[in-house]
Image (cartoon, rainbow, N blue to C red; front, side):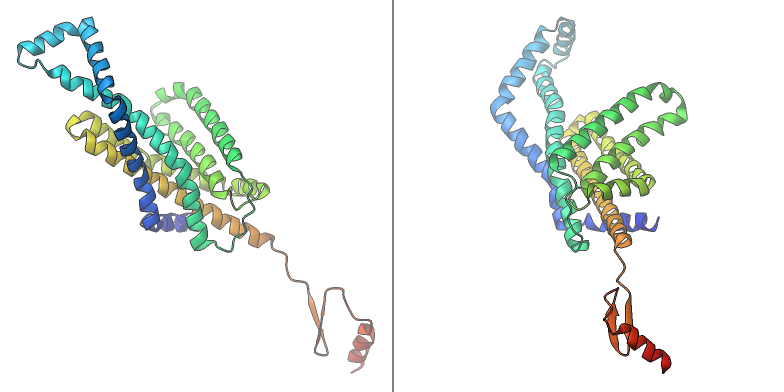
Length: 299
């Protein structure tokens, strides 16, 4: 429990590090770059296609006529761009976050290792391909468990317990693996997962609850269209910062657990006997040792 809180507060402090702040701003930069590129090449064609679709949608014809009758004839000119933005924004956001996830976790683990665990040997027990397969396998299991648990969501307490528990399990499996991939061997990783499963699951569940905060901001941006272009980037930045905090928490906890595990397995120094001021190590006793011991006993 002490290690859990220690790694938590260390992660909070590390979130103020300039490198972490820069990484948390990376998805915003990527999102702006993607948005500018798409708007330059495809914006006009996309808006025109949506406008034609709105005009051809027979059920909306009376609605457009009614709006024109009350003085809002150009409303379609505003609806079409908003629909394009609503459709393309999730795609841009998901792409940016996936790129950040690939870049951020190794960078944050490296930051923690350099500043706190510089003497920890890197045994490279997990490659990028193995990490990808591990993440995909864990995600498939989590999605299957989530679908199987849907009927239980009708029971009021379980809907607040099962989804966070499943996503917490997925978070701990993926992030703990990535935190240990560079430094731990396969056997060390398995042992840490076995010993610290409940603590790692707790970190995953708490990180999942923290990840709900950006969703509230996101929903506000969708509801209040006027604040859409402010609230959505803010939600992305908060989500990335939560992601960074979770990665740091797992990195601090897992590398600390690995350090303690290796300290336990460290062999004890060989016994040293001192005979008449001379040191003799292990079984490599000199030939005259029996005579020296006999002489020492007579004295």
